[in-house]
Each structure stands twice: as structure tokens, then as C-alpha cells.
Image (cartoon, rainbow, N blue to C red; front, side, top):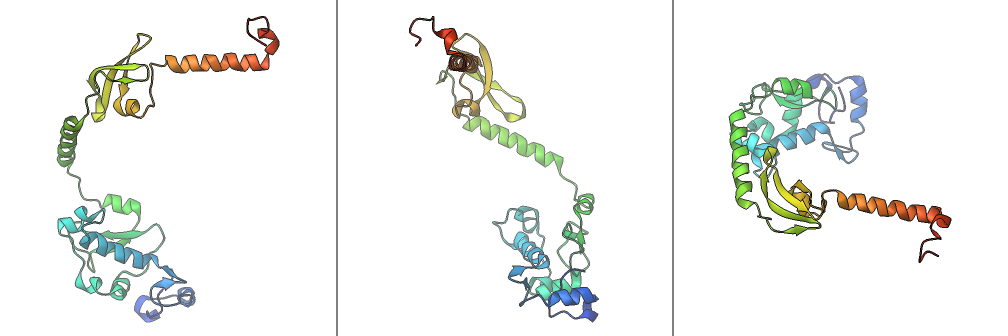
Length: 224
């Protein structure tokens, strides 16, 4: 059953002896030794996503007209009396009818699997439209990097990539042509076709051998 607030009675919610003893740990209100109980956090989050336009999920709740019943909106005690405590930490607040309000009779504590099975059908067409809008927006805002130099790479022109990625065809100083993501060029993550890394690795290997085997290089001019 979990931990119960002190103002609830055993008869009203069927509190077990174990839960009754645990309830004594409450200092006051809805806090357990200074920490809010999970049911209170769920109640507060429910109101936030229905009434706060700045909430990350407002468009899916308050933005769709989902409301909290007056009985719950004005009283956490009523909410807890109607819902009871969470069966486990894995349970969260869920609605049977996703287009209906948060109200008694339409809500339950459900696991993630149960909520997925009860999820409203997603409008695939809306996702496709949003993808095209974002694609067009990115095309307008894309900065033309043709003719610019990034390390050893000279940008020849733009090349459309999959999943809306911005790719640029480049010619390296060694003569090799490669296709590189725009952000890799701007951030300096890619500076050549790969020849720079190979040369750097070769120089490091020579220096390492020179350090480990100094006698091998003594015959060379200028070597100590």
C-alpha cells in the first residue's frame, strides 16, 4: 500500500497496519521527512501540464483542452482519496480515455507497458508535415559554405543528405574528394580526407621509435 498521509483514516482507504506505522514518519502535510510523496508530485504535475503553457507537455494536455476536475484541482486530499497510493514506483498517473479530463473514474495508476497499450493513435501525417516544414526551414536558413577552406578541405558545393542532413562535397589538398557533414566542418572535427590523421600517426610513430631506439638514428645527420 505504501506510505499514507496522517489525515487519512484506515476505514477510508483500507490502510494496513504496516502503512499505518509508516504514516507516523510524516512530519506534516504531504512531506515525508522534508520530501514530497510521489502521489503529491503526480498531482502537481497533472495540474502543471494542463494549465501551465510553459510546461513541456502542455500542447498534449492543456493545449488539447484536457482539464483537471474541480474536485481534484482544489484538493490533493480528494485526489488521494479517490486514487489511493501508487502500487509501486513504476506506476504513474494514466487516463482510460485519453481525450477526456483528469477526473474520478477516468484515471488509474498504470505501468509504462499499460500506458503504451492505452496510448492514443499518433497522427503520422502530422509528423510527415512537420518534417517537411523543418526541412524547408533548414534549407532557407542553411549557410552557403561553397568556396570556403576548412583545414585542408576546400568546399566545392552542397549535397543533399538523408534524414535532412547538410552534406558538403570537398576537395582535399592531396587531391581526394570527400563528402563531409557541415557541422563537422564548422566545428573543426574534420580537417582533411584522412591524410592529415595518417601523417600525424606516422610522425608520432617515428618520434616514438626515435625515443625508444636512439642508437638506430645516430647515423642520421643532425641526430645527437
